[in-house]
Amino acid sequence: MNTTSGQAIRAVVALAIAAFPFMAARIAVAAQGVRADVAGGILEAGARLTYGSAGGEQPAWTIDSVHQGVALGGRAGCTRIYLRMRPDQASPTARVLCRGGDTLYAWNAATSVWRADRPLGAEMRLSVPQASGAVLDYATSARGDTTVSGHRVAFVRTVITTRDAQGRASRRLTERYALALATALGGVFEVPDSSASSGWRENQRFDLVRLDLP
Image (cartoon, rainbow, N blue to C red; front, side):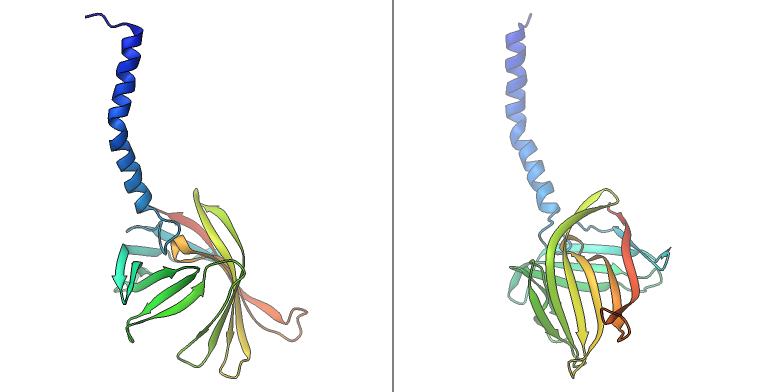
């Protein structure tokens, strides 16, 4: 049977329409699997994060597994991450994180309670008491984004000042925190130095130099 060009075009259009629900479903599944607005949203089992410091690369962090949509302690849509920060680490470290508005909460397994962990929005402040009596003072500024190993990652600039029980500053970290990775893209550690014009002296810096995602 001969087919005219008009019939051929209509057949192609009909095929595309028939396939659209399937394609839309695939796109929706992919979108749900990669969430930049939740903790560790772009991480998967087998992901590797390699940091550089002092002119050399550090052993890569390896993600054992990532569990999204976790419900725990009255919160839902949380993330449980198992990772190893050293090649010789016998068992993975577990982190359970949950976003609540512009604040990130961390689950304390010892006390079975959520604790405000850090601010995620721009121009925010948050003080987080530590068990030692010290306090971590968080102050965020501008949001931004960058590319690491071809992956676009959003971040918020954050300054974290560690203060002892008497309120004296003992350390400062200026970093770019990426919620989608549940960690920082890089940062600079400083210690107090009265001889420096800023009152601080750089002690160490680090940067995420390679991001391998499965």
